[in-house]
Length: 127
Length: 490
Image 1: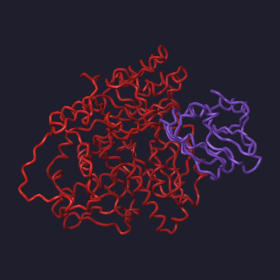
Image 2 (image 1 turned 90 degrees about the horizontal axis):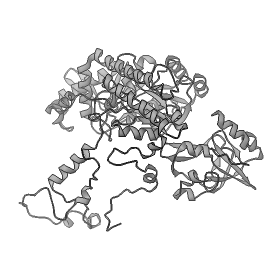
Image 3 (image 1 turned 90 degrees about the vertical axis):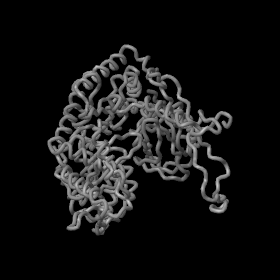
């Protein structure tokens, strides 16, 4: 299972990538493999609030509909519209073109609750 | 059976002008449609209907039916769905003229027998569930869930607590219909996690209970096929917090005559008559999902309910009724089958149904756990959940194995459910299968497990013996074609 270097990870298998003032959020390789082929992504709306630990959107695969849990608190400043027509990007390039939203974090402390790539690799061995 | 030949759709067989009927000549003056219907509502285009002869229609549907897999053709161990054999005699009962040739608008006084049947079925379901009074209206399990939840809402409203009690607690192992019904009824859903034995985690439950609690929905045995031994304590906790307990009866095939939901502390129960009480199902119905409630909740039942009076049976509206859940009396034909099933079995027979369902499931589980991971290794009820994770490690998924089973002429079990089991394979043999069938299934499952080790690659082509091979489910979901189009149109 691929774990991208330099990203931060949540226990619910979302990744977080700092890009200046905003941060991108997506799901990990482990998560997309568990889901199976993704057939629909409910793309959230701009300005929606994310609350850490609460679902902010759903992803539907051939197996099940799964909630995506917000890894941090923040406000959505950009969404990946391409997922509407190409949900397969989540399977094909989960750390790149399969990103889901870009968020302005509420504060800088959000990193405290997340794992580094090394910590996430260890976490994956446990689950 | 030449199963490999493609059967063209009726629309593809259509020949202009061909027909399977003749209509008698008009013996009244013809009125132009335009005089009867405003032009805005008139269809301009001819509807595209297949033009075929009667024989072509017969051959078409007979051809399709020969490719169908049902319990009449082979083993159908679909977990959570109780695909058992339904004795033919109950079909005869449902077809009796007194049941099949009556009309819902007939005066109640002319259908006393039908009302008596429904009244007695109500009484039997109350006895089986350990509760007081039922409605036979809901057309399916989830419909019964919605009716039950609306009753819970009405109960809290009567106590002036409906604004406050907004949360429905549902285990992570629940059927997907539970949270869906709770949302439909206007509740928010709180998920309670399962413990290591596969039951409700009591500490987690306690942390969720409070003044916002409207109720708890529970299946017992749950979707892992496991009986929650803490049910009395769970019921006490929920009641102490002011909530009600709803019993999802999809798994009732495990408990008939052995334990009653009412005695476990449940306040409302639904039964899937089409699963537990003998109606062929699958393919969308019809079903019946009556609910039974304790005495205190009977005033909230949907109307009409059937009461016995001095002048026969009467249709009555309970005083705080939540309204109608369905037109007329529910799916009446299904009710007749259930009534006949209960009458043919009686108490000892119904108990034997569940005992044999549980025995068959444990027999399979015992023999299969050597070849497949068994996450919750304890006595099961009427079904059990294996995990395909050992095979997944060598590159063969549960889906691959399910497809292979089709090659061996058996319907695949429920897969990837419940969600809390990785690569889940949920097997429910039911009481109607013989030991020979169960042994054959064990043999095939062992063979599939061995194939996964020896030739993992071959699974990618499964199934190869069926009329069509592996369907591309992903593409079907991503590029939906919802309407037939002929080549010249596309």
